Each structure stands twice: as C-alpha cells, then as structure tokens.
Length: 284
Length: 307
Image 1: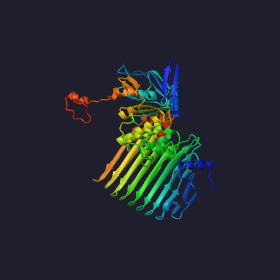
Image 2: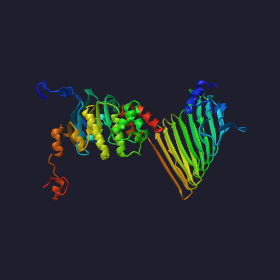
Image 3: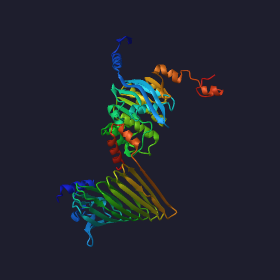
Image 4: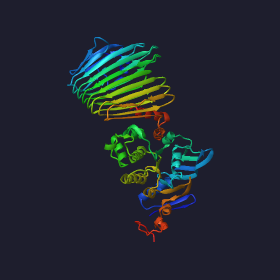
C-alpha cells in the first residue's frame, strides 16, 4: 500500500507497486485544467440589474470529472454557456490550462480546447450525421471511426450515418449525435450540459459507460451538468449551484451522503402521513 | 473537337456529371451547335424552322444520359433556343442541360431556353439544369428558361434545377401537365447576391387520378437581391401534392413566397409550406463550437442548405 503525506511544500510518497507509482505520479502532475474565478453574469431587465450567476469559483483538475448539479433555474446551464462563450461573462475570469480565455469568442475557445455539448442541439436540415461528425472533427473521418463514435452513444452507424440531423430524428437521437460530435475530437475540457436529458434508459446506460471509460482512461477532463444520480456518482468532485451561487462543493465521498443520504427515507409519505406502502421506503 | 479553356471551365460548372463528346450530346456555343453526337437509342436532330434541336429517346434507352449544354462567351448576345424532347414509353434517361455565360463585356448577354418534354407511358426522366454566370465584364447575364412537361401515364420526372451564382436576372416559367399515376419531383436551388433578381413561376396541373407531385425549393438571398417564388399546384383529379419553399434571407435582400394551391376535385390533397428566415443562430453557434469562425460557419450552413 502507498501512503502520502504533505508537510508544507514537501510531499512524502511511499508506494508498493509500479501501478501505484504511475498512479501517484499522475496525480502529482495534475494541474488546474479549468480555473474559474469570481464568475458573474448580470443582465438588465426592465432597467433593473438582475444577477443570474454571482461570484462563482471552482477548478477542474486535469483528467478530473466534475459534476455540477442543483435545482432547475439555479444557473448551471448559464455557467456552462459562460465557459463556452455562448454568453459573455460580466465579471470574473476563466483560465483554461493557465491561459485566460475570458475575452475569447466561442470559436476561439473551441480552438483553445473546449468541447461543448448543447443541452438542446439544433436541427440541421440537409446535414448528414456523417458530415456533422466530420465538421466536428475538422477532418474527414474514416468510416470505422464514425462507426465507433456512434456506437459509443448507442447508435448503429449503418442505420444513422447518412441520416440527416433534421426533425426526423427524435430529441434523444439528436442529443446522442450531439454528444458524438464532442467525442469526435480530443479536447482539454469537455462540457456536457445535461447529457441524459431526453435519452432512453438503454442508450443512457451506453452513454454512462462511455463517460466512465473516458474518465477511467483520464482521456479528457470532464465537466458535466446533470441531475442523474448515476452520473453524479461517477464524479470525482461535485459542485452544487443554487440561486446563481455555489452552495457547496467537495469530493464525491463527502458530498454524496449529503445529496442522496445513505439511509433514505420516503419523506413525502411521512409528510402526508401515509402508510409507507412505497417500494423501498424506509419510513416508519 | 478541342474546346477552349473558357468553354471547358463553364462546362465544368454547369455539367457536374462531366461533359464528354461521347454518346448523345449537343453543345451549343454562341448560338450555334458546335458539336453533336447520337447514340444507338438517342437521336438529336436540328430544327428546320427555328433554332434548337429535337431529341428522340427510344424506349430501349435504359440508364443513358443526354448532355445538351449551352455556353455563351460573346458579350451582348441574345440567344433563344427551342429544344423538344420526345421520350418513348419505358425509357429511363438522365438529361443534363444547363447554361453558362462568360461575359467579359459591358453588354447584356441573354439566353432563353424553351424546353418541352413529351414523356411516354412509364418512362423515367431525370432532368438536371444548372445556370451559371461569370466574367469580368459589367454586362448583365440574363437567363429566362421556359420548361413545359407533359407526363404520360405512370411516368416519372425529376426536375433538378440550380442557380448558384453569376446570373443577374432570371425569370423562370415551368408548366407541368400530369397524366394518371405519374409522379413529379422538383428540386429548385437558388442563390442570389448583389443586385440580382430571380422570379420563379410554376404551375403543376395534376389531371390524372393517382398523380403526385413533390416540389422543394431552397434559396438564399444575399446583398440587395430579390427573389419571388410562385408555385401553384392544381388538383383536377385524385392526386397528392406537397410544396415546400424554404429561404434564408441575409443582408438587405428581399424574398417573396406566394403559395397557391388550387383543388378542383374532392380527392385532391395539396399541402404548401413556406418559410423565410435568417440564418439559424443555434446552427451558427454549434458550428462555431467546432472552432469555425462566423463566416466559415455561415458558408457551411448555406452550402448545406443548398446541397
């Protein structure tokens, strides 16, 4: 077994296997891939200033998976849009791998290394899935690569590759294509805004496996916005945003019990004075 | 025969299948037939009474192509041509037409192609027509095509037209008379820029029971250009028609879409959809999230829309 202790700036590491050695050193090499400082977004409505996101601070380490969760309307998607440049921050700084990208446009941020899956991807009449994947990759992808990309989001290439990204695709299918476009190229940070939304259970399971694989292999730094317990449980760290501000942030081990509870009770039935007939209810 | 560079370049634009002096073909150059050839099943004959050709396609023609491009490089020319196509029962052909003008002068150069298609029973025709203008001159390029299509019982006709650039003024007139069980597919693509103007009038008369028509028009208007679409589907029998006009409007352009559907039979089902709008900002954002600049993303959207 290995042990690691820190005293001041000195780090003392003991390890007992080559795998352990690699693991420890990879962690030491970790850098702040994304550093968000005092991120603020204000708009004027009817002449009055309204703060949508206020003073948000967080970092995502290289190879880490951070999940942002929280109630609807709390500002999670706004944070994602501010990171990609879809919305322009009115305050704060965003550093990607040490480089200030706050003033950059969407395309400049993409070139700097951010991949972004929209929550509601657009319809492209006349655009085949194949062409969209090629545009996403910036090169013409060989057939087998397109196949792998679609398989990783639970789609069969033979059936879909030459279909158009139009209204004939269901919302869930468009969403999976959207995720495949982000996976088509390697990025420093990939942002997925509610990747699970509108996706059927079977495809969701394939998608979770894909995120797990990316995370396990530390191929990309991942930032996911999600309400889904399976995705939240995969995270290294969890950030809860409520009312436009960080409510809490911490390691998965310490955050999960506060989010889901280890001894869950069906409080709704308790409140209603019910008889506790709900499946899995531990209420008394 | 050897073709000069200007002609070869214009041909590349208007005949994307690749013009070759093989099989059945007729190249009209500055108002004259420059070269022509027949195939076993397709014969091209020069008209005696007026400019143009008669093209006879036998029922034995299966999967054959006929190429009849027009190239004008003489500024100030006003070329009118009448081409008639007689397609026998059971034939299956691709007819590639198109006109390209290279205008290096200051005079208006004009080509009016009046084409009539007499399509026999169960014949299958794909007609491709591309219009294109180029040249460093200030003279306007004008193309006013007239297309008349008569569809026999059970026949099918695909009309694929495209005008992507360089044509200052166009007024297109298309008339289709449809027999029983015949099918018509129309794909019209148009892009105008600068001060160009384009008008497309079409009337499809579904006269026979079981006839069906699908008309798709996609256009992009840039600069201060103006476009007007007026397709009319007339249902005189048990028939189905679907007209769909989509336009992207940019800059100071003007697009006018006039839907007209005219049912004169209890079993006529006709639908018209028309939409005009600016470039979809969500599509722009998505493409920019791939690293494309706004201009690059716009070009991809337009190219894709007109594909």
